[in-house]
Amino acid sequence: MKIAAVVGSPRGIRSRTRRLAGLVLAGAEEAGAEVDLIELADLQIVPCLACESCSLDGTCVFADDFSAAYDRMLDADGLVFASPVYVDNVSGQMKVFIDRLADAMHYQSFAGKYGCSVATTQVSGGDAVIGYLNHVLNYLGVTTVGGVSVALGDDPEAIDRAESAARELGRRLVLAITDRPRYPDQETEMAENREYFADIVRANRDWRPDEYERWVREGWIREE
Image 1 (cartoon, one colour):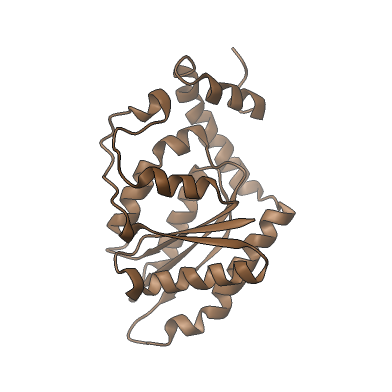
Image 2 (image 1 turned 120 degrees about the horizontal axis):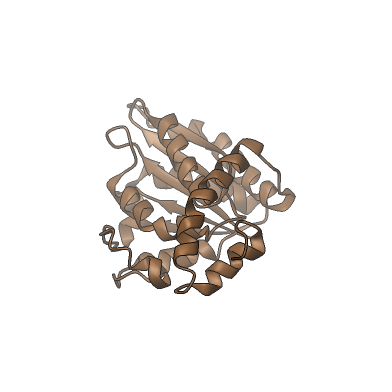
C-alpha cells in the first residue's frame, strides 16, 4: 500500500505545511504503508490554458513536470492534499496543479482511492481550505476521511501540538484503504458529478474508447 502527499507550499524544506503533511505520512508509515511526498515547489508546472486538448487523448500539450506527479498519484492507494492558506484559499502552486487535474476529474481517473487534506494558516481559513481540498478529492472520485488544519500564529510549537492528530489522520487513511468504509453523502455527491462528466465521456467516445468502456464497466453510463 502506498500513500502519496501533494504539498502545495512554495517554501520547500522550510515549509510548515510540508512538515504537517510529513506527520500524516509518518502515521501512515506506522500503519504499514509506503509513502511518497510530492513537492510542487520542486516541479515546473504550467497553468492550464483550457485548450481542451487533453479531452481528445488524455495528453496535455505541455511537456512539463505535471505528468510525473500525476503518475506518482496514480501509483498510490491513498492521497493527501496539503496547502498553506493564501488569501483565504490554497496557494497558487496548488491551484495551478488542481486546474491541471481537470481531465482526471472528467474521467474519474482516481476513483476508488481514499484521501485526506491538511492546511496551515496564520490565523484563519484553515478549515475552509480543508473543505475545499477534500471537495477537489471528491471531484476526482476520491473518498475522504477528514483533515487537519493548524493556525500557526506566532507559536513555534503549533505544529508539534498537532502531531498526534496528524499521525492519527495518516493511520485512519491506511485503515480506510483496508476496510473500505462508505460515506453516503460523498457517494451521492460523486454520483452527481459523474452524471455531469458522463456527457464529456460520451462526446469523446470515438477519441477515447477505452475510457468509455471503463465507464460502462463501472456502471457509470449505459452503453449506447
